[in-house]
Image 1 (cartoon, rainbow, N blue to C red):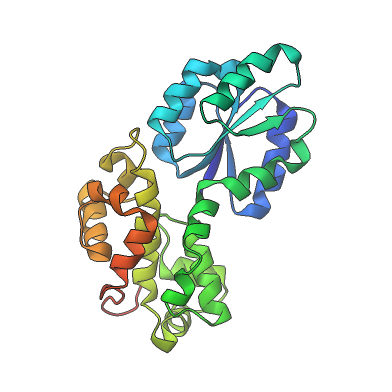
Image 2 (tube, one colour; image 1 turned 90 degrees about the vertical axis):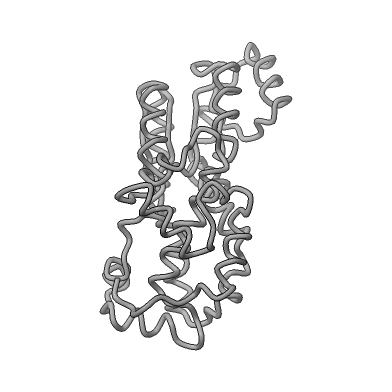
Length: 259
């Protein structure tokens, strides 16, 4: 499950995010320092980052943006006139998402989830169910679930337990009507996420393979080749939509349906 990383001293904001994100299929990961945030980025699929504005500083924000341009950043700050110049400078440099302490806590989880990386990817792939021939309710639910759980530990069996059905039943129903093999679609969701992550200079192929839970970078590379026929460093050039397009060209089936 993707996480929202929080580097902030406000307990009220952290509590509000933790409560609200549970319903959004996101987890909150509170970070004690920049170094802790770096470790989270290297070990979890990070959907968005919430940073305390005056704690991180403009130089730190710009460096973060350079390394992770695809990860949405939300800047949180108290409403103080003294911060006006800093806020203006952040806005001029492309930071657009702000959370005002004492004002936005109740809506913070909704705002972050709606603009997070997973939501952006889902919006960009809005036509995917039609292109994949997913029409039945169970097919659509399974697609939504795998899109939000891009993790190498997600299997057909784990997904079946989520829906309280057998693995065989889920695989058979998902592949009905000319839809792709479920095991292959689970791999597709991971590669779609990887295409987003590798667009960040702060991530290497080895780092992304670890974040997504693969046993090795070579295992990850083999999965990418199965799904879209290219090497992992080429994924940012394609982007999620390009990955889907290549997947649809004869790569939708795998042998059997055991996962």
